[in-house]
Image 1 (tube, rainbow, N blue to C red):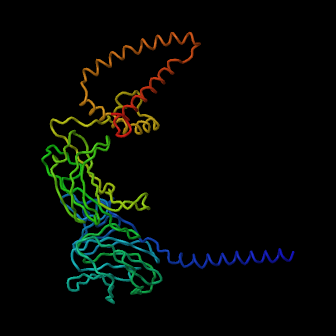
Image 2: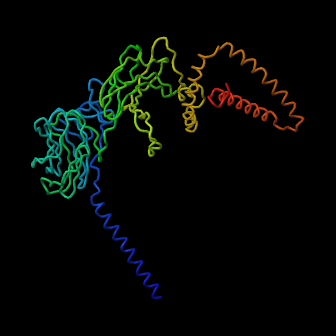
Length: 448
């Protein structure tokens, strides 16, 4: 009994010790779990004046995209905001332990970024020129935070708690905590750009490193191309470490690519152009811009094991945002495309609308039939169609006779499905024939 009580007491101590350890670890973490102040990418905004959209008050802010007349710098997606000085601000819900990450493209070293709580200034980040450099500082102490590169995207993060804040530029590290200018409230509810020239985009809570991407410059996406001599211009950025860039167009329904144009040597950022003719389109249709980068580097297996060899590595498709063009050139046949299911159904069916299940089934098979259809279009180039038809017709006449005689024989076998077994044997023999034919052309395995 005494031993049992000692064991029970020991267990209680262990449980309380574990509980206190969890409290000690979790409480500080939860106390400093910064909540995201707000997120915004401006993708749902209307092009034009920022003022009045989603609560923004703007004297010199305009929402734009890359297409003329805007031709904006875009960090992510298809839209950003351009400001020519003045004030752009917005109120938000109170946040006493928040974090905010935003991207700016600053064209000159002037102006500031204001943070308020209940109309009281909490802190200001200002741009100050020093020689050839632009330094981000806090106001009024003018304490240096980091150097800012002009005319390229820069990420600024701020976080605050307990009437103190910190800043971080391009994820180079958080500066020491600094006190709010006014400690009447410990929260923020206001963000403002004041007198800053340039663009801003992609507000969130965390730093996301800029990813390499390629985008079409001109003509605008969704343009119909009737003259293949027209020039296609594209640009790229943040491709450090890559050696070359290949650009092409893809018809996504069939998976077929145009010829690729390859830039053998590229800088991290740049712009280039080719004529549409150089991509060697052979069908009219809808084609999406496609780009991949390559580099010569040491080979890894499953991302872990070094083989000691070097090989080419390929990126994924780098095009962002998505852009496509309709090739419609006189003399070209259209690429195969199934007719729209809903339109077809409305023309041939006696019912008003198909069931959801039928729509799902049609949608599931549509990509496959598009590929099969275009394969059929292209395979015709390699056969004499009249000869193929006549041979197919003769074979087709034999099948009914064959089926009839086999059916008669099956009567003597008590209805045993001999015809099905015959077809199984034929398929098996055909498979063996194809396998042997393929193996014949594989060096060292087949015959000569």
